[in-house]
Image (cartoon, rainbow, N blue to C red; front, side, top):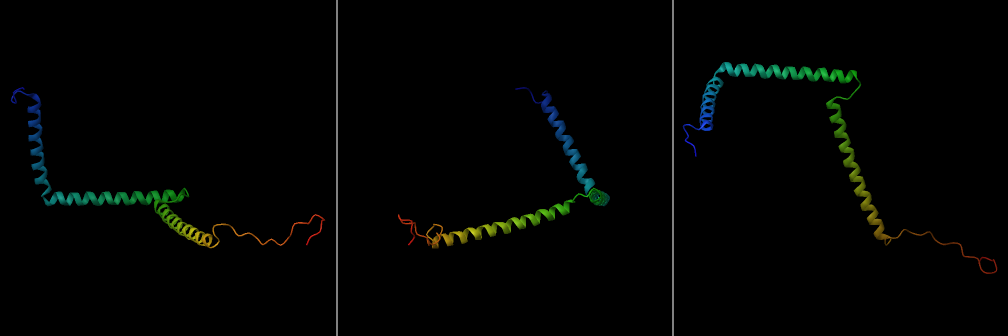
Length: 126
């Protein structure tokens, strides 16, 4: 192994570690000040306002293009999910009703009553 004092990788790691410690202490001191807090609050407010304006602009654009907005698509998806749930319930009820009626008729479809008799050899019907 090489000596730690002359090893360039070890020197580099030590230098980066010292820089990180210095930056962390500087950032910690800066974040403790009320000016930093005010600046971050202003930046957050500006970002939120810009995002709201962009959303309003996109909604107007989609309305002009006769396309649904995100909120409208979300509403459609929720309604579709509700309809699918109701269809699933109807399907299960129909399956249950079919199973119940199949058990009563021993599983076979009912046959209509036989009212005609086959003709006899002489061609007469009885």
